[in-house]
Amino acid sequence: MKKLNLILLGLLPIMSFAKAPDCHNWPMNITKGWLKNANITDIYNLDESKTKITLLASEKTKKDLYIQIYHFVFFDKQGNTYEVITQNKASHEECSMSQVNSYLISKSRILY
Figure (spheres, rainbow, N blue to C red):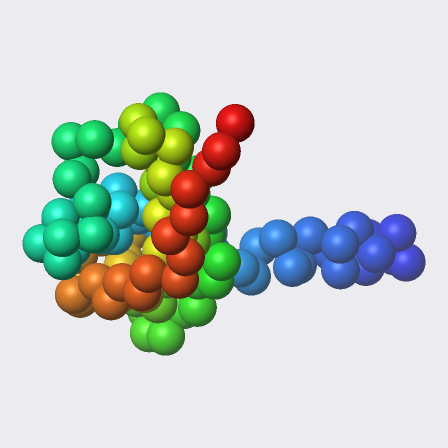
């Protein structure tokens, strides 16, 4: 009986936390448009293969509704980087449950 209880206690955290939706594309695409519209950079000049995406936080607020915070690092072909933090709401059914709030936290030039 003790072994069964230990196994159940070990599995309980895995079973109780639902996996957050993978919705990085929605805030990333909206942020690229924001970078262009704000005249920060030409999005056609970005090297998408180098983009770094990090999910910083995902908090479940209601049934299948999450607030997600992403950190994006965009690289352009001239060696500039653009670090942006985004915040939006998403669900497993729809990534665009709210507008995307984008914050440019760093723009820098990489000198090789």
